[in-house]
Amino acid sequence: MQTLTRENALQYAFDFREPPRLRVRPGEVFAIETWDASGGYFRTPEDLAVPGRRPGFDRTPPLVNPIAGPVYVEGAKPGDTLVVEIESIRVGEFSWIAVGPNRGPLGNSARHPDISGQYTTKIFRHTPGPSGTTTDGTVHFSDRISWPITPFVGTLGTAPDREVSTSLDGQGEWGGNLDIRDCAPGNRIYLPVFHDGALFSLGDVHASQGDTEFAGTAAETNSTVTLKLSVIPGVRVPWMRIETPSSLISLYAYRPLEVAVETAITSLIDWLVADYGFTAVDAYCLVSTCPDFRIHVYQMCRIARLNYVAGAELPKRYLGL
Image (cartoon, rainbow, N blue to C red; front, side, top):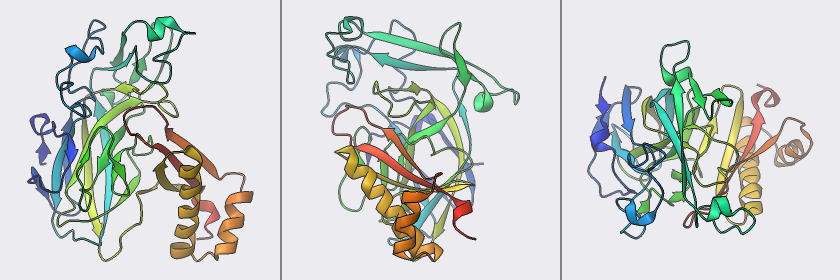
């Protein structure tokens, strides 16, 4: 099995000019080793998020949130759709979160000076699960609190058409730093292709995350991601989409949040009309009446120019298939 090693996982932009670091055939299973969002800086509670101490923070924007790639997919052409299927994610031995002055919505809080007045780094130990690995292990938040590792890929995408977008705050129909917990094993992620080979990149894996990633970082970790890529020729999705075994999820990122939510819903309606035989009237009424229709707010944190990320989800059992 081909592997894109961690030494090739320190790119900081989705850039169509970057030469491919791996070439794969459609349907070929391969692996990508990733760094955590700090590129390995945070290892102990003494490693604080002081900008002057962090490598790459002398750049504008700073060099954080590294990605691996690009991966060239044989046969992918502009106008196609790339399908990403994550088979497994094995996270590292620990994950971290870092808070402090000017970090997140409470980074300047007078009400909570223990957050805004000092830097704090928390390191979470991981223990293996029944498989003997961290693919199904446990995150230990403290001696009293723990939960299952629920890994997902926070940043992934194809190379944008003309622009170059950083892995820190780049977002668009092609993907980017979206922190969508449904970019997880077992799901299919659909991305538009703008260049030959698709030029796919991936990084920023999380061991777990709460809705919105409120503090600006979650359980950030190194990982090994096993996946395969395939191509739907001649059809390009208008924006990144996800299909789980049981549901469809339409995505959008924007500020203010209500625009992201409304656009995700209208895009889901378009999907139902185009691919599943619904009339616009029926799809419109369905999302307003179905008790299992859901809106997710995956990412809503104040970092650089990040937009807020919303998803509109409908279970497949309502598709009448």
